[in-house]
Amino acid sequence: MTAARSAPPVEPSALDRIRVGSAPDSWGVWFPDDPQQVPWRRFLDEVAQAGYEWIELGPYGYLPTAPVRLADEVDRRGLKVSAGTVFTGLHHGPAVWDATWAHVAQVAELTRAMGARHLVVIPAFWRDDKSAEQLESSELTVEQWKHLTSGMERLGREVRERFGLDIVVHPHADTHIDGEANVERFLDGTDSKLVNLCLDTGHYAYCGGDNVKLIKTYGERIGYLHLKQVDPVILADVIKNQVPFGPAVKRGVMCEPPTGVPPLEPVLTAAQGLGIDLFAIVEQDMYPCPPDQPFPIAQRTRRLLRGCGA
Image (cartoon, rainbow, N blue to C red; front, side, top):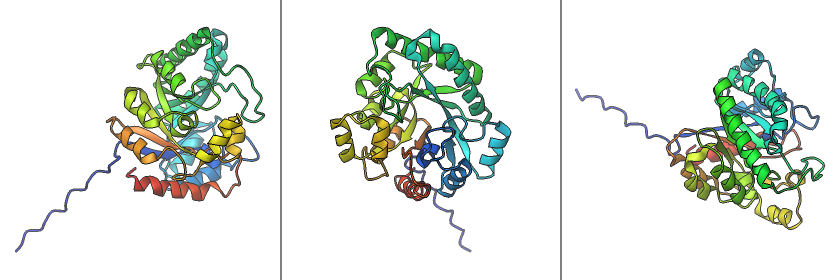
């Protein structure tokens, strides 16, 4: 009798350190409550149906904030939470700390309760998302840079000590941490033990940065990824005419992969090469959008990422 042959070993995924998810942002959600946005139950239903396992909380108050209720809602759909998100203006100095901490602590508490380990920190906008009104200078003074870096280090320390979470700072268009020069200045001015980066591929490309170069140069500071692409034709017009980020999104500057830049596969390959587990959360800014638009895009994007090995 011939001995049974053992099954061949299963080859690991080429991107086996990358954990893919999505976020309310990919359903056109920017605010806790807005009639132009998809209701939260529909978001949870559709993100699960599209094939994602991990989600972010999005703007605090969009999803239920009672931990037991939110846990029930995500568990029943087979979802898990990767991170919460906070907005800060720490370049304004110690005067804003108490208000900042009140907001951060609220989000961090829910994030911890959901079993997540990361808090995505978005710096304050110098230009209003909706009205495009310029709120302050687009450039920080030397003193403001000191406030920003020391404030982020304090935030990282407090969040870790009190909630056991790691902060990852998100470079973003129309903020003071945007393109290559400001991102590198921020990283060089902060302690890697306390502050690392949520590299958003779309925002960094929007602001002229090279994602793969940043991963290879500052790999030890990459703690989290947001995956998105920009339409280079629309972006060129946005830059030429100094269009603010909010109106640029309405024009479609953040586009469905693989139609834009940067190519995602080289970014994911570079991230895989860091040898650490990383979340890669899909975020396609679409506020505002028709309610039936996000789901098919999410399905196609998930298939695309599977094709890359993620």
